[in-house]
Image 1 (cartoon, rainbow, N blue to C red):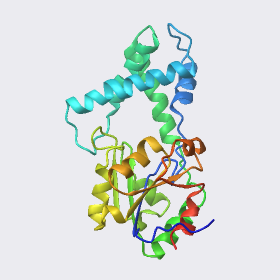
Image 2 (cartoon, rainbow, N blue to C red; image 1 turned 90 degrees about the vertical axis):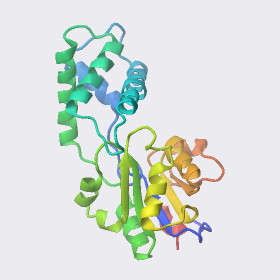
Image 3 (spheres, helix red, strand yellow; image 1 turned 180 degrees about the vertical axis):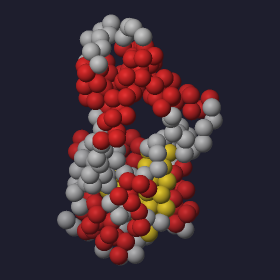
Length: 249
């Protein structure tokens, strides 16, 4: 691959899910599976489209509004009680009848068990790329839309030591596509945003937030190849994360 002229860049900030790590969580497929295991039926047949719409309605509606109404801080994450209420509203949308309090608790137990057993592997070439960029004296950071501190995940793979700033949030106003996290990382690293590149896998969140922060957007398509067709002209598109080593000499 020919080297890309990014000589002005001295800082790379990374997304986590499907950029450094495989997310390994399909909300629609898992909910369909758990609903079947619990023997639940709704007023309509459970289809992928119906489940996806219900997830969006609860997440972008009720949970979004809850966080804003309660003015939660940027590092807030839902308690189990909040997730059970989320599940209850999800089941209501699907038209599930019965003791919704118990059924929502049962559904959340399925999610608790799944998350406890979940393993999140690194994307091919992620370790080598991070280690090599660090050895080339690039400043590295993390900015990730997520509930819960990712430092435990990074420490498990002995990667945390390479990142000078780690930011995360899933709270509206703070999370991507807002530039908030990216600019916060740049400030902590002492980097001018114009000398930063943000590396992610989704145009809607990662490329847009990079543009808003006045950073170079880099789209890695290994896990989400369909995103290439959505990318704007100013985005650098790489097939795999290891291609960064060709781009940043």
